[in-house]
Image (cartoon, rainbow, N blue to C red; front, side, top):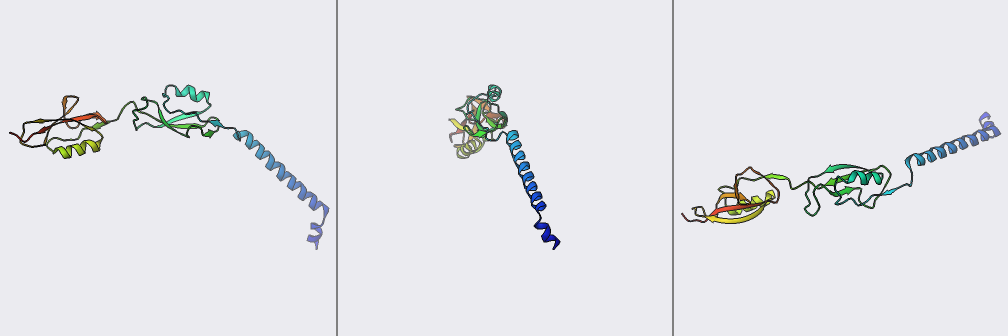
Length: 183
C-alpha cells in the first residue's frame, strides 16, 4: 500500500522529471563537446599525389594540413620518375579529417638488383626459361664452335662477359654464347 501511495505522490513525478532533465542535459553536453573536439562534418579532400617527388611532399602536406608516411617502395614503375609517389591510401578525392596520415607507396630509384643464375652448361631452352622466370630479358644469341649444340658456354651483359652470381638490375638483357655443334 505504501508503494502505491509513493507512486501516486507528486514528489515522485517531480524527481522523475528532474532525473530525465539531467540525463537530457548530460547527453546534450557530451554530444556537443564531442562534435567540437572531433571536428564533426569538417573534411579535407585528399589531393592527387601520384608522380610527385618525395622532396616536395612535406610542403604540400603542410599546406593541406595532412601528414604522410612512406609504407612501401619495392615495385619500380618505369613510367614515373624515381623517388616519386606511385599510389596512396586514402585515394585522391577522398574526404578525411584535418591532420590525417596519408600512407604512400614510393617508386624506388631503380629496378632492384637480382643475382644472375648459373646458366653455364645448360640448354638454350632451359636458360631462356630461367632468365625469364628470374626477371631478366634474353639479349643477343651468338654461336661458337663447340660440340654441345645449343649448350650455353658463356653469358654476357652489355658486351662484357659475366659470371653467375653477379648482381644486375631486374629487366637487364643477358646475352648468351651457345655451342653450334661443330668441333
